[in-house]
Image 1 (cartoon, one colour):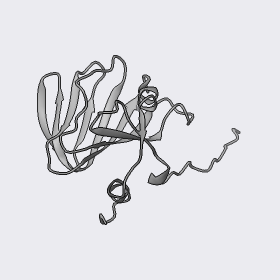
Image 2 (cartoon, helix red, strand yellow):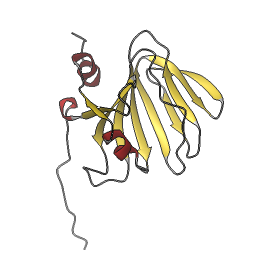
Image 3 (cartoon, helix red, strand yellow):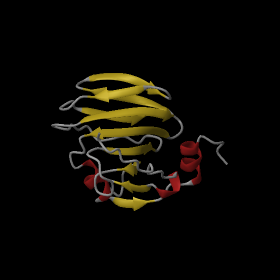
Image 4 (cartoon, helix red, strand yellow):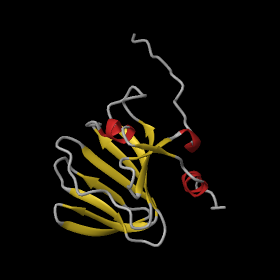
Amino acid sequence: MQSLRCMLPDVKSPRQYQAFRITPDARNRLAIVYDPTTDDISFTFCIEIFDVGGKTPLHQHPFAAEMFFILKGEGIASCDGKTVPIRAGDSILVPATGTHEIINTGSERLYAVCIMVPNEDFAELIRSGTPTELDEEDLAVLRHSPIP
C-alpha cells in the first residue's frame, strides 16, 4: 500500500504578494502570487494590473502558454493579428509562439489573473523589475470588497 502524505496548503493574502514594474516607466504592474523562484512549481501565477492606457508590449513565448482571466475592467487582447474586446469574466488563452498583447482601453484599471506554463523565465523577468506596492484599490479588487 502506498503511503499518502498530507501537506497543508500554502495560503497567501494579497498583502503578501510582491509587485513589480518590468520597466520603471511601465503602466502595468505584476503581483507575483506563486512562482518557481520561491515555490516548488514549474509555472508562474500572478495578477497583472494595467493602469488606464497601460499595456503589455507585443511579444511571444517560444514554449509557454499564457492564460488570463479578467477580474475587472475592459480592454483589448491581440494575438497573431486578431484583436478581441475583453472585460470582467473573460478568459484568454495564448498558445506558445502566439505574438500577443493586452491593452487597457477602459476608464479604470484592468485586473487580470495571469498564468504562464511553463515559467519560461517569466518570474525572473518580473523580479528583475522595479519593486512597487499594491495600493488600497488593488487590495480591494483582489479581496473582492468595496473600494474605499
